[in-house]
Length: 253
Image (tube, rainbow, N blue to C red; front, side):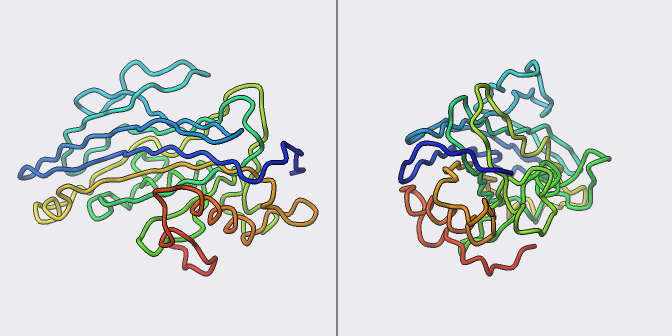
């Protein structure tokens, strides 16, 4: 993909935090609360993240029309073993944003009770499996256990370094990038696992940073340049720290 020259600025980035599940234990019954904490931006990149509102059974109500943004900033779930619950965070890149990369940092503290054996076709795939299918590639795991993804579009499973990430071009319309649609609780999850999950959360943080300064010769998008872009975000975002940086040598699961 050819690079579009944008404003010559030193660094432009944006971040938005989405807390997608906070789990509390009551015997064999969980209550999960989701909160979307909206946008802060710097410079010429503007992103937002929302999800659809759900009812008390964790099913979407009043789905948005095509082309409209989702609206929910808080959802509450009563979760049971084997249950599948709608949760569909989407990152929006607003009109006029400069050409950028999109990153997502995922902290899954309910990993030990999430069902991992499901499939896309069956509608109960893990959040990770759905993200990869939606064009997000894992590029590393931070020192404190957060997974970092970059948006690669159709090249998500492609090891070609020239397709390691996708430029998000500047557009006159809102662009949307889905993460996942739902999550499923392991049907074999027992009370002991519930207790371990008490107070846990799944936290998704989305970031955008200009491509300018983070590409190689001939518009190459290599892993090295993508890691450099991620680490530049870490340097500029106050709530990140050295433990969020990547070396590029991390093992990918």
